[in-house]
Length: 576
Image: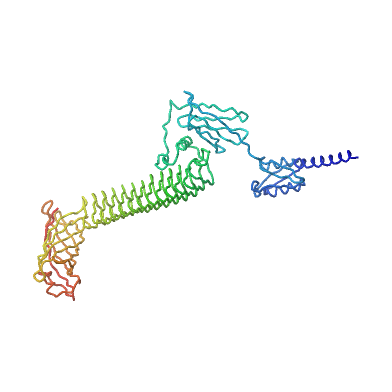
């Protein structure tokens, strides 16, 4: 009786186990028409009379399916809709779906030169689809861990050697001996990328990473996000520097292929190709290609190609190509061609500016300015400008088509206006003028600028019977035009201040308007004469006797409370 009971219990469990194992072998038919993964699994549950349990972190419930199957087992249908990446555990009437654990294979090998059988270091070996790679050491040895698939093909690259493709036998554990053939007869010159030549890259990027970038010069792959600590630190994947990241965060510094959205580095960012959108470095940003968007560095920004957007460097911005946008540097900005606004605490330098503005505390330099403005605290220097130069001290231009304002303006060829005490242009006006007025006032003037508008710096002396000796200083503007072969007409407006010899004051000042007729006697000598309309400015109230000394022999046209308008004359000579 006991034996029969045991047999019954054993039979019961056997039947139950068989029934459970048959859950996956149940045959059903399904027809999914653009439904979610969640709804598809619900339909399978209802038709097969079972339940599923799974982690929706791995199975995307909102993935949409269109799938039809007739008289297929539950296992077959699950494998098809889940891409055969899961295994199943049966528990009573429930099927638990779990992701298969990835199996790996570790491949060992050594690279040798086919000509002398010497080991080759710095060889990059990688699986291009899986984005996994490594490099050989100084003995030519390498080791790489690859997910186990049906077929593994490794790409081998090394500068000055031919590329090699290796198919791996996953059943073999024997270390590989791989011979590489050097490029001897048709060796291509090795061109180091711009970024690898940069001083910052030389400082922080190791030899292995530099060789790896050279080996993989045409291989890049995309990643949505990457987090790094320091270039090459904490990763065995030799392909890390070939990533094109959407978002990149580097705790101290990073070295990557490209950034498409945001990159932030605690100290520095180094990018082989381009940086788009936003790049922020605590100290340095170094980009081998283009920069588009916003680039901010505490000390230094560098771009090997065009920059378009806003670039802010605490000390220096250095660009090897064109810049369109705004560039702000605490000390120095440098570009090849520039269009926009360039602000430097001390210095700005560009080869060519077209529709741009340079503003610096000390010095602006450029080869040519198509349409633009240079504004400097001390010096502006340009080969040719179509625009304006404004400085606190000196403006220098070989060819000026526009406007210069400064204490000293120098231009070989001037087509425009130069304003300032000292001006020189080879095709302009520059003359030393000595003249005398009806009131015995003796004047010495330096006239410089263009013929259209020239500057007048004037000094002189006058002895008055009633007020004594006064020294004169003033500034004015003039214009002249040719009236005949040897006759030139001019109009000058000069503001003069008078001060006594013992104590500086400007108790008397006036404005003079004087039309002149100039006659060319010799190449370097002109005689001139003309009337002089003098308006006395109301500076300080004195007696009429005080003012009469300055108005001797002139004709009074109008008398005011402390102003007068007089007519006199001016005669003199210009010496070139």
